[in-house]
Structures are given as structure tokens and as C-alpha cells.
Image 1 (cartoon, helix red, strand yellow):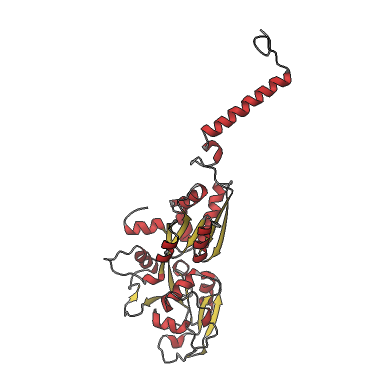
Image 2 (spheres, one colour; image 1 turned 30 degrees about the vertical axis):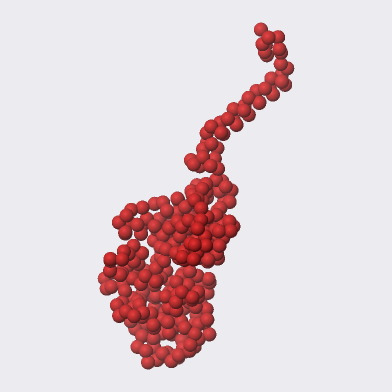
Length: 340
């Protein structure tokens, strides 16, 4: 018996090492193909890509940023980039492939569904817009027609109007905002995208010219209303409930004389009720001031897409929705009685 082989074939020391190395490489390759989850970092068996871009709605953007930070902490092999641009950009970038996940804080229009039949909508939550007033506003309610007078492009004398005569400042968003878009469309119809054109307006109230003030984000609007006596503004509900120095205004829709929410019902409860509203149920808030929060994919999601969306709709993600004043899809479905 020869020390390194059989049948009289002997191997040098270097040859022996080469054979062993080849056998080890062959074994590793076999393991990768037989047990891919061990090497992919995901139980799905498909390696997560190094980059995942989420783009679109500025309303959803803060949620996506929270979710991305948590997701990357648990998936260090994935880099998630979150970008804004608005719901329209979220749809366009999902379709053209420059974003793996689009974000839209509205439902897809019928024309969009027809034009992009491969788009898949993944509901992740919902939100609602409320009007807030600072000290000096003489009522706990405001009508759609009254709000439209404050944010339109016509300078008017409002001193004869019981509610509006006390207003000293009107606050709107300085940044591109899904919140402003939904509020503007409630006031002026679906063609309205923002309220920028109202900034030069110089309405007159009991205390003189009513200021037009811009502020960044719902947090900025909240602060501006709190800091300016007699100010009115609009924010997502989560920013306002429990906030000091402001109060939420019950809203009377156009063509109605009913102020919502009804007395004794919190705004958060009313908005959640409207998000979960069925046709045979009583209205709890203004439907036009509520909206879905959706992720979009171009076809069925896979890999990091699927993993991220699954995380966004998980119980672990609910706290991030509450942190920014939104409702998770689980909370909405629980309110509907259908579970997650």
C-alpha cells in the first residue's frame, strides 16, 4: 500500500493538497444548491438584493423611513433607500422599474388600473386630515364652505362672518404634501393639487389683514397654529389629538348641516370608523378627508420586495404607524371585524 494512493499511483504533497481543496470546493457548491436558505440570509431561499428603493407619497415617506431603518437592522445585506416625489411619482417609478416599491396615499384611478394592469396594490394603512385652530377661534366647528373662503385665491372682507371674523392667520404646507392635496381636493375638487395660489391673498377679519403662513410638515403646521392666536390649519390626525394650545374642529361637509365627529366621539375613533366604513353604516367622519396608504409593485412581489411589504403589514410594524399618527392595515381590518 502506497502512502498517498492505490494501484501504485502516488501523489506528491502539493498534488494531495490540490485534491483536498477541490473536494472542499465541490462540497461547498453542493451545499449552496441543496440548502440555499443557509447562504441567502432569508428563509425564502432567494438572496435579498443589495438595494431596494421605495418612492412616492410624501405622506407615506415617514412611515417608510421608520420601516426601512428597522428592516435594515434585521437584514444587514439589504440597503433600503426611501424617496418622496408624490403618489403620481410612486406609480410612475413602479411601472418604469426605477423603484421596487411605489407609495401612494390614494387609490388607483380607473384609468391607471387600465393603463397599468400589472400594478399590484398592497394596502398598509390609512390616515385622516383634521382642521385645527389656536386660541381665539370662537367655535369648535367649521364648514367646508368656510374653510374654502380662507384658502381660496380671492381677497375678501370676512368681518361679517361669525366664525371667520376672528381668524388672524391661515396656515398651509410649504412642502409638497399628500395631506395638502387631499385637503385641497375636499375644498375645490379633484383637479386641485395644492393651495399655493392662495398665499398672496389678503382677506380681512376683525383684527385686520389675515396672514397667510407656510410651515413644513404636519409638525410645522401644528406649531404655527399653536404659536399664532386665531390661526387655523390642517394636519394628519395623529399630530393633533392631545396637542397643547390647539383644538380640533368638527367639520360640516358641503351640502350638510351635521358636524362630524359627533359629540362624545374622538377624532381618531371617528376617522378609524370611516376608514372601516361599510355602505350600510352611519357616517362617522368626512370620507373625502380620509385616504388609504398603499404600497405598489409591478407584478407579484419577490425577494426583498415581498419581505419588506410583509414586514410593513406585520404586528411589529404597527407602532410606527401610531408614532406618525396613522392607522395600520391591521388596526383598520380589526375595526372592520375581518382580522389581519
